[in-house]
Image 1 (cartoon, rainbow over the protein chains, first blue to last red):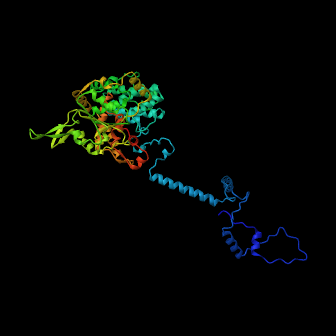
Image 2: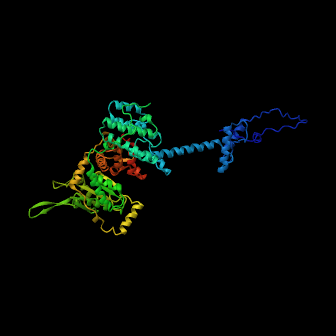
Image 3: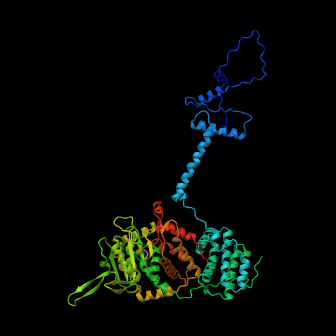
Length: 254
Length: 339
């Protein structure tokens, strides 16, 4: 409750029915500045409550249009409620209580609908007539994240160990990272090399032949387990670096 | 920070293309399969993926289930493929009153000898076209379990071996159509691939009409010649079996199939037979594409044809209108490509 019931003082006084004042011979001039305390008997208050609770009466909170002591927020809500009342053709005296009650009802209804849909495992994205959003793999589930690998260090370690197969792989992953950083491909762990090749071909066709060759070499070495002598590795590495420089990222691949 | 290594890039790198070629000679395989493609291509317009998958199944020693609405050349495609092979061919039209003995054969009493003689049924051929397989009830379907998996037919305690190759090409209409039965899961699992035969594109349909308008449609099968013998096919299959599969790719296959057993939209996941099918199919596909090793691309390409008939959606997902292909795509999307 944000206010109190207001009834006219006249009605209150009438209800209390005080005795009539005897006429005076010379009435003194009224003192406008003086204050008079009106005492409302308990019986009158009870009577008022009883009347207010009767269904035939419709007592509402009186909201002054401009009360300088009202806060800005309070005035804002009052205006919103007035607008709602005018728009919806509701009763003439809106109340905060009614507004919040409907807000709570709305939230409860939404929660119930949501729970029911979740229980039925309904894909809500379909309800709006668009394709379900592509699920993004959680990077934490990955064995490694190309955006976090220290390529120069790992590449050097692989080369020092003579593990050229791993070195070719790291060089290729570094190329993928560069392509992803330059928004030429959309990195997704479930995409194949050929998918990236198609993406690059649509974004930057000039780079396609070089990346296609780098992909072929990587696949032969990694999936095909092609033995890689140092001389051949040097050539493969050179092609990777050349492509990396075309992409403007010699640091990662060089 | 420049990565100083002994393997500094050359300014003009030599193209190492020659080094990156298959270590197995796939020339014969490519030539033979290309000949089959050309023969079928004389009649069938378009359907390149379908042809590639049929050849893949042939090389992987697997059976194929072709599903599509009437009139999309399922039966014609199967007959054409059979015709390109110089091997015995038979066709069985499945009907609701077909009995197992009508398929497998039966023992006939010989009064003169006083014994029974086994008369082989139409299943005894190298390429068997079973047309509208889902119009026969489960009793008849069950007769195919043994022969499709073990390549033998046991009658009266005697096992009769099938010839090599033995390939079942079955066609079926979608199960929603009148007069069809759902195939038992055990039988579906015996098909390497289930291939959906779709409608042709507008351009393809115009080419079909042009061909028929110019008098092509009379006897199209006469145009097709047998270009692959049984020994040739056996040699190609031997080559396919020696394809390289890296350990991470094996794990990738196992993860994809394993996910079907945990997916909440699936009532029934795929069996280990599906993993083996995916592996064998990927090896054959890689060979067809000129590689002597399998890549994750091969696995992804075959995931739906291998898995779509081996999984069962939950009733809730079916009611929502979900399909097996959608679930397979979700599963593939949820498994990281080994790289």
